[in-house]
Length: 320
Ligand SMILES: Nc1nc2c(ncn2[C@@H]2O[C@H](COP(=O)(O)OP(=O)(O)OP(=O)(O)O)[C@@H](O)[C@H]2O)c(=O)[nH]1
Ligand SMILES: [Mg+2]
Image 1 (cartoon, rainbow, N blue to C red):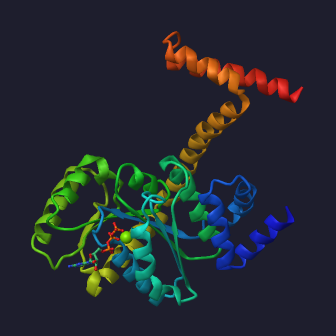
Image 2 (cartoon, helix red, strand yellow):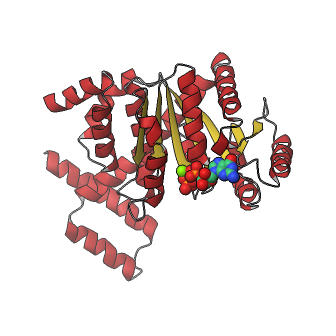
Image 3 (tube, rainbow, N blue to C red):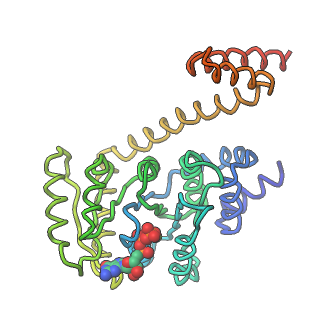
């Protein structure tokens, strides 16, 4: 594993090329990355992780670009991970982001990377925290994860972030609607972008009203921004910093991070058992179990139990 370790050494020295290679391995679901991730883990936990999510076209990338500038002015180095659940089938959005963020990438204190999963959506849930740790280990002060809020993605991002920023825009109805469906809980800072448009104050009022119904202290801020002209972006970064400082001082940041790690372990147990079980069963047994399902002789719960039991004996057989 000398090759692997030298990759880790390069990463810890802050080399962007090493980060790029490791994230590609993560995207591909290549198990060769697992020992590397294990090796860097003790060197992580230093960066603050900010998740930015919201409906398509709300202005997330524009906002992130402005926030990166603001953090740079404060002397912080920043990594941006644009997580795209729609790729590899489309990928147009990511390309757009790359072009838009191109102005940032000339700054050596900024590293922008988009990530898609070759596998299913569940792959991204596994890949996101791993990729965040790569950026953390390379020594960046702030890691921003941008992802479009569709389905369960935003929740997956919230499970990696120290602070989750929910971005919406006026006049979508959609924006508020989406937030009603359990999304409100995951937001730590709310942003109504495109404040130059009609209805932004109303959207802000509605969000504030919904947040008042929850009993959170302190109550999350709802900010107005015009990201395309940079208005309100510095203030948004200040609110994020304020939130993080408060969480750090009260010990809640550390608690949240531990909760996230524990959740990841539980997810890993599920994923690893599934992988090991399927790998242990030979094709004849899988075909037999499929027949039993098709002919409705065994229900899925029974098949699963049988598969686990058979895999266990096969694994014993392999070892002895
Ligand atoms: N009027 C107005 N337009 C904005 C503002 N901020 C961003 N935009 C524009 O909105 C469009 C979408 O912006 P993006 O930053 O790509 O939005 P996004 O949320 O990252 O989009 P996806 O990643 O595709 O979901 C772009 O044309 C931006 O120029 C704003 O404050 N006001
Ligand atoms: Mg975007």
